[in-house]
Amino acid sequence: MPKRVYDAIVIGAGHNGLCLAAYLQRAGLSTLVVERRHEEGGGVNTEEPVLAGFRHNLHAQYMEFFDIMPMIADFGLEDLGLRTVMPDAQAGIVFPDDRPPIVLHRPGLLERTHASIARYSTADADRYVAMKERAASLEAFLAAGLYSLPVAQGIDVQGELLESMFADLGVSANFGYKSPRAVIDELFETPELRALLYRASVEWGAPVDEAGLGAMFVTFIMWTMGNWKLALGGTHTLAKAMTQACYREGVDLLENTSVESILVEDGRAVGVRARGVEYRAERVVASNADLRQTMLDMVGRDHLSDTWVRRSEAFRYGPSHVLGTTAWCLRDAPAYRAASIDPDIDRCFYTVVGFDGADDVLRYIRDAYSGRLPETAAAGTWVNSLWDRSQAPPGHHSATGWFFLPKASDLTAAEWEDVRATLNDRLLASWQKVAPNMTRDNVLADRLYTPDQMERKNLMREGDFSNGEFSFDQVGVNRPFPEASNYRTEIDALYLCGPSAYPGGGVHAACGYNAYKAIAEDLQLASPVQTERGY
Image (cartoon, rainbow, N blue to C red; front, side, top):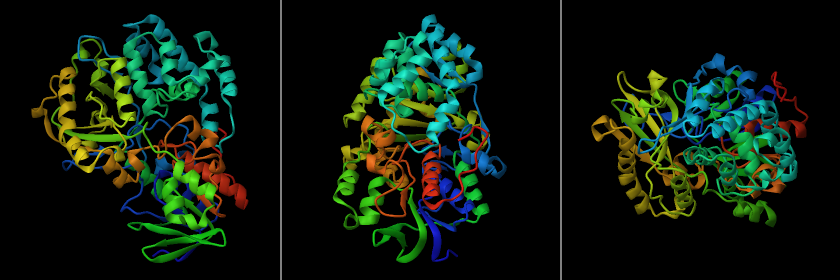
């Protein structure tokens, strides 16, 4: 039974909230986590939403940060049940004609990546592999930046880094000013490779047409490409291990309980009201909820300055990371025609289907950004049961995919209902063109979750999995806005620890980890346990 008075209260048991709670409790603060759902994890959730025995990750899929996430080592999550596998073939794209697929492999198999790209362009293959190796050498630097409070770093500073690391590969200092698309187009001549990189750029945090994010593509996205692990048993096993770590430290968790308000007295957060009950926090209240929900709904405008009200109201959600999740229960895994050229495509962790080429991907992305349903029925897909037989019944497979779609508010409820009734069939038609066995007879059942449903299910406002647009004025020290970029708010003892804060969406737990660093500075708590990587 939860107590009524704690040192710290964390709102929301998403993976960032769990991370923060574990560190707070370890530092000696009695900590309560209040979670609205019946289980922890937020977007790190695995369910059986279509047929029994077929498991689908309804949001987070691949884990690109597991090798650098401090909490895994600091709390021994592998001893608490976290298990992973890293497929050899990591990302691929197939086309509806006889063109070869492009398959990108894990870092130890870059010779295979080179061979795949070289079917189109040896120059592109040489440059991609060289850039991937250079970006990999930046891992400790990128990790240190990810797991620290944000610092101002102008484009000129980024440009100096780019030129020092990549100048001989055609990258100049002014690439920091460019959009990811402009960078991709300048570096790579192959439209088919561009198509895969455009899609990857959006998926890993850099809207393709956003000027000023060019450095992000060259460094961060090139580093993450092909670093992905599959969580055995589904991504919710990460949440389960983090929850067990919290219990082991002594954290109390209160589930099925929505926080109605944050209690503010004399400008200081002193607790929360949940289900009509007041839970007091003597030292810290931290919110894993999104910015608007935290500041405008839970704190309330009466407790905020005009500046914080305006900033919170102006914070933008979408359109760059608005998802629809499609789930399929299959008799057989997709068997791609392109496997006759490269068999690795049939065992590729992440496969993009439905696009004809680079221009098609750009139209698709720009349609979604503009509030229009893309004409192309295309998706990034995973068949996790190829590596984890627990995710489907014997002899069958589960497949999951991501559409990028307009924001939840761009369409009416009736229009979203029509999307759910038709889009999966359109995707299946596209899928069958590249994998002839993907007929309706191969599908036992399927389901589509649209952005309006994702908003309700996982509290991803507008269906935006980053809980805030990634644009140049909402990243780095500008996230969510300059006055709030260090996890602190104008309400004393109230902190942000969710993806509306730096560095944003992604299963890295950096928002929770860095929020603990800010709290530790303010309360003179112990620093986080340092991993061998030194951050």
